[in-house]
Image (tube, rainbow, N blue to C red; front, side):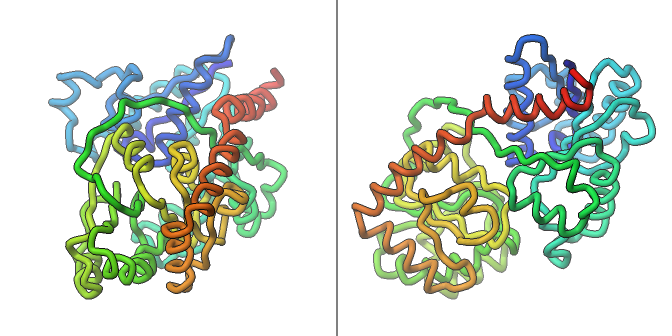
Length: 364
């Protein structure tokens, strides 16, 4: 069994859940006897591929491509088309929704749909029309579809009921990598927020919920990792809430992120919508109590290991966070249940279920 993953998410993302998903899957598949998989990228600045051989990830490639994302995308597309024409694989698995490969592909392809946020919140994305059109084409043309949660499967069927029989739900697996302990400048008491902050992540309501807690305890901080520096609108909101000095945004390595989870008082995931929510598993692994929305996929993934709140109501968010900050018995209970819950989400299980999808297409 030979699997070819394309370049798309690795041309776009330096960090992110989608690229981490495909790196974990690629690494896991290559550990299975009789299976070979490859990510067809010529050059990438994705952090998760640093230990994976990529042809031009060297001094020459850096000189040609570093920082030139349009050039990276264009040359990676050409490289993928070269790999597709060679036809030396059983299954093709694109890593995002650009249908550039359709005309030249002679083998079946599997599409992973991570969420339907563009379809559900069409006014929140500048590139929405393009992404939705491309996604629609691939959903209809794919030989098999992987949905990363039952919640996501349900959303796909709402828009494309005709593809229900092609969908298999396969949850993310968690890779139990160990990182060296990191001595950091984020000692003390803090609440953790992870990832980007578009509208659906509900960051504004989260800040409004948190502000009275920060005002009441000047030693308490909010640490946001990833997502880039705070925007002008975010800085204005933070200033209006009088919590500027207690809110910090940082970019971190995997080891530093693991340490942030380990030392945080609470990890908060306030999104209105998520397809899966990989940070839940990261927090469970680190023994960090989780407060999260009671919507979308969160109950499916978190079960009884999460303290839930209504993301539409600031008071609900605040009350749930306060409980985890002040009730040591409840904190301990959520931490224990989180570690138990994590056992349901192994990389080996994800890899085997995905391999079953590939083999079914090839009658192997």
